[in-house]
Image (cartoon, rainbow, N blue to C red; front, side, top):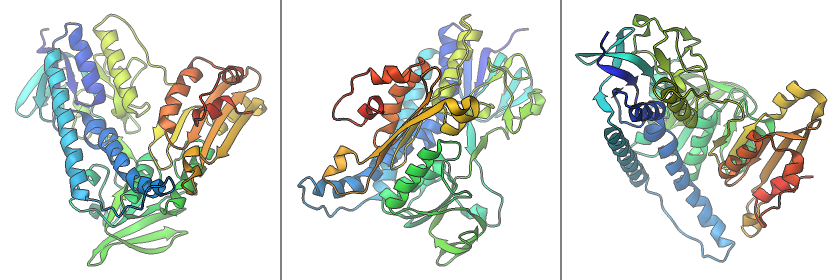
Amino acid sequence: MTYDYDLFVIGAGSGGLASSKRAASYGAKVAIAENDLVGGTCVIRGCVPKKLMVYASTFSHLYEDAVGYGWSPVESSFDWEKLITTVDTEVRRLSKLHISFLEKAGVELISGYAKFIDPHTVEVGDKKFTAAKILIAVGGEARRVPIPGIEHAITSREIFLQKEQPKRLAIWGGGYIGVEFACIMNGLGSKVSQIIRSELILKDFDTDIRTNVQEGMINHGIEILTESSINHIEKTPEGLKLTLSGTSEGTLIVDALLCATGRLPNLEKLALENAGVEIDKGSIAVTKDSRTSQPHIFAVGDCSNRINLTPIAIAEGRAFADTQFGHNPKAINYENVPSAVFSQPEAGTVGLTESQARAKFGDSIKCYTAKFRPMFHALTGADEKTFVKLIVETNTDRVLGVHMVGKDAGEIIQGMAIAVNMGATKKDFDATIGIHPSTAEEFVTLR
């Protein structure tokens, strides 16, 4: 049978862009469909605009810190509208850049929602397209908890589009998205209350990471309402009235509520049933080579049942293209994937948490930790601490996990991830000469 395309990609986010360009480089005829701006969650309403807002939010602390170094106090003001406008301009510039990359690669961009008609046919608007292979890369979407009044809440999609800065902001959820925006908005001058169901933020991270980040956030003035939830949201003349349950039972009046209670694969409009693609717990079920229950349909990124990180989606997309069109089979290693939380203080991690390591290796686990005031704050007087941790399996001396809370944690852990993936031992760390004075040298001086 003759098809319109060798590959049809649904979704022009990180995974879709990477796979389509790589497949086209092997000579495949490729089309990619996207209903939104090209770039996906990361470029449009995730990593990129969020990190720009992180940068913006740090200046308020720097103005204060500068006084300890001899600079005169600064009476500054913040323009929310200017920040939102300039961030949006940069997002749109990057989106256009990605479109130009598709054009140079010879990938046809089709605007609109794509949905399945049958296993080899998709429909976009009033047009139908057939393909020998189809890749689903639609990413995820913010989840809203179905409680009365939830329509008044915003998500991480809308936070970048608010015309006015909420002076009183509640954030519901203790994951990395909620934590990062709590720190961003606090740094920009909003009064932030974060509502979490457990005692600590950042579930599934190492306990020391969770404790130290939460401690730092509280020191910066963020109110964290632990073991609490929201039962009802009501719009009143004074603002949004939140009815809370749990240890913080009562009401809270805010200007806006950011619902950061998780994300779900964005599968609703795909009509996967028409293609016979199986779903596993809300995600597309895939094999190691990203193949779905249909042998010619594949899925990568946040819509599949694997790790939801932008670099993972990119790696999966390229591995798919290399395997299917480059005749160079590749598989992704999902062990020791580094990650960072761009909170204030920042966190970075790679490898096993302490609890994971002890569950796997028992008493042969030894942890090396240090907590100290970073040199930068020796003159500022700020109550800031940096925390570093190595998790070692004593029978082999291998470093199983590296964790850090403090400035530039993400940058430092990226380098540590190479060592962990190469199987570095504690002796290898000890034999490495540190860069002095630096925070990173603490990892090679832990005893």
